[in-house]
Length: 89
Image (cartoon, rainbow, N blue to C red):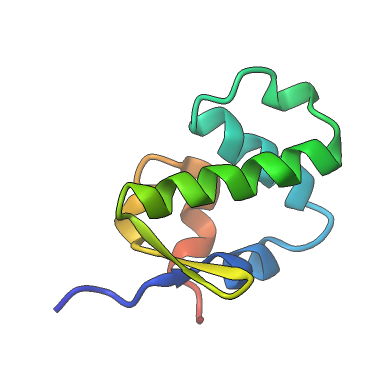
């Protein structure tokens, strides 16, 4: 049996508001987005959504309204997410 998909919004909630900008920039860096570390907050948020949509196109996620449901394997290797992946959904 495959694990339940992971809600991106639930993951962001577990990360917490104070740590979210760094988490988003780490996600972008992990995805290979150049200049993510110095990207303004709003631009980083836009790029995160673009990268999540790329995961949808690649079949590693689905769009669910204003959320994304990701296969947990889609974040394999993204070390900043590891502490939050298997917390209660």
